[in-house]
Image 1 (cartoon, rainbow, N blue to C red):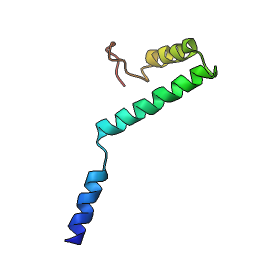
Image 2: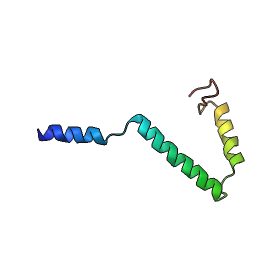
Image 3: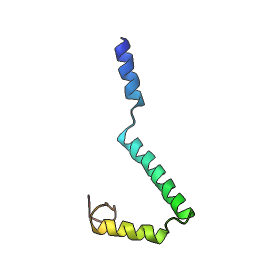
Length: 68
């Protein structure tokens, strides 16, 4: 019985893939905002790098047919 309770607790604590993606997205966007606010990078530099990665098919863009 105790083992079943432990398994149930572990399952409740597990995050879904969607939750992990959402949380990572918030963290990533916050880091990008901070880097730009502190003038570590510019929006243009970020966009240029994203464009380069897109050309190399290293990122997927929902507006393009390219995929990882």
